[in-house]
Length: 376
Image (tube, rainbow, N blue to C red; front, side, top):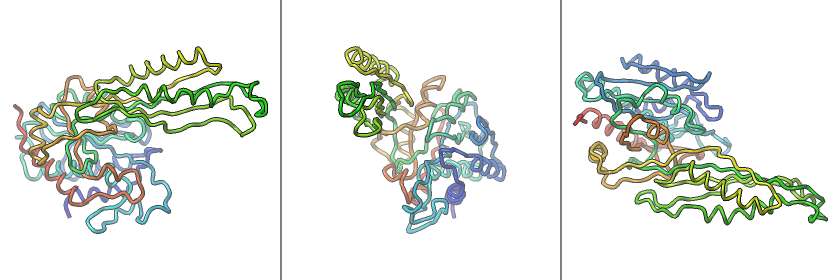
């Protein structure tokens, strides 16, 4: 069995659901794997059971960084699983388990490529030092990527590869994320005399058209349009009580060059204006923010990677990755690709699986690219 498949099965068997986000066992397993294979490693613990692991191959000054997160979303209802979510069962060309596609397969492909560099190439003759960054907390707050940037991991980087599941297509852009919460405060009253109260639900619902109209109409050539999902709505205690509080949570996905923070400030300003004429009081809060990122397919490193992976047309991602932190906080402009095994339409669900053929191909493509890429 190939190295990447062995690694994948071992990682699936280690529970790293987030929350709680305990990746200690995964990090310690990778530490031991690296030691056995003569690969230098460094661990950055930033919480009791959360941290990052950095592996390096080669001694060149400039680096190529590969990144993958070790945490997964929760398993959910076990009754919906036909296979043990931590069993790493192999059936009809797939490996099943939580995190199999998102994104322990991508991590396994990276590690398999590192071992290939050790055994098949002369690491000292590589034009780049190859760095693998395994992060924690990507599924909740991207805490691992934020902590890793404190180490200067991108200071000498010339290229970034994030091995999130893309069905082996090459992503060169991803939408930004803004989670925006609005709360309304009214006045309780008996349901039979609603005129004596201030209905927080009614006041909040009047904001919905404003939210829809606020979605920017900019069209990005790869990512398309920005979107809005009104994800939750809470309010009221019973039918016969005028609700005094209500809350809505919105998920905006924004395309470049829109700044999520600037957009959030504009939204807050619009809601404040409405609040001046409303009997209810409004309050807004940003709970998650990630910048949109994109780069040109004409970049030389991206062109090399697309040729090596036999891709002709790049794609954009509707969701955010660690790249949103790494790219925006890097000390200089770094081209990137998002490329990995796994179907992005089949993640975060019961019976998550990944194609064995895609894992093997990803390992080979990464290994070939890293072995042959030259510093121009």
